[in-house]
Length: 387
Image (cartoon, rainbow, N blue to C red):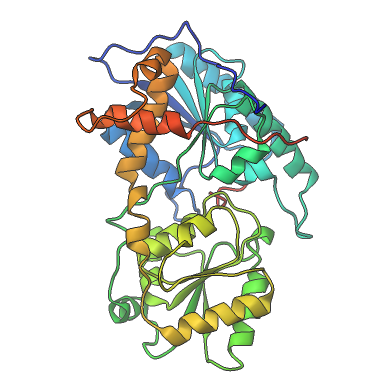
């Protein structure tokens, strides 16, 4: 008999009246810095901005974890102070480790898990480090204490206890920023040669799990037959990322551990062909997308062969249509539906078992989220770029 979910709703936290916005304290250990330092956490700020635009009364508490117990203690004290000072309806923690600051719970807790927090941090030997194992243990414990857990990919369910109530909501996309631009125009703006074949690697090349050396090997093999230059998209202004995605001929993605990688989704939004190893939810993202290649394994020869096919075909992919359902406006409404389901469980019972065509969009979203919940397979048992 499959394991059953255990309800974790707090009966003492009724939903706010319709006339008042939901008040949320978002706790995050990562936030884009204004100094222009290379970061990949712009998606957290974007989600916060979209939630506010959708009517959520949201405060953000960013604490610098830096793997320091002292920083966590200071953050915990400050989080408690903020929860006491203002009448929040719930806490939304980004990453499992951020959820520690909300324990023991004073109000409902929603946690978003994104990848390395569940899987653990990978070291230079491509194995989970002791700190990574501790992070994964903390994340699983926080998930069991949370009222709802948002996962960016369904495969992450297998790492959690069967009692954890989950919703799968991938990180959304800004389709105004990540949009197709003529290749020659993008290359001209970046000062790149128009006649070269360019493969793009996005991410910190020194991060072990990104496996930049594997991408380098694959491109070296391609160069035996087709001249191709490998461009590293790291340390560049965030506003220029769409230019690189439009200027290059393919994205090469070699990570060994991911949740729902933003680089792949952003490339698809720009119609850039993607060549990727099977990791995270990439197989789902690339399914039936013309011009993209999902490699059967992670050998450099396999990746090189796929990259050669893409480069010889030329042209762009049909990726934008495949990810249109990940528009940040739509994913924001799904997050808000999770908030409401936590604050007022009776609303969930009131949703019909089949969606009505004349039902409000909000009700149809909540029904979709309810249907997405199911028991996880039971298993015994950070990095912000892994999203």
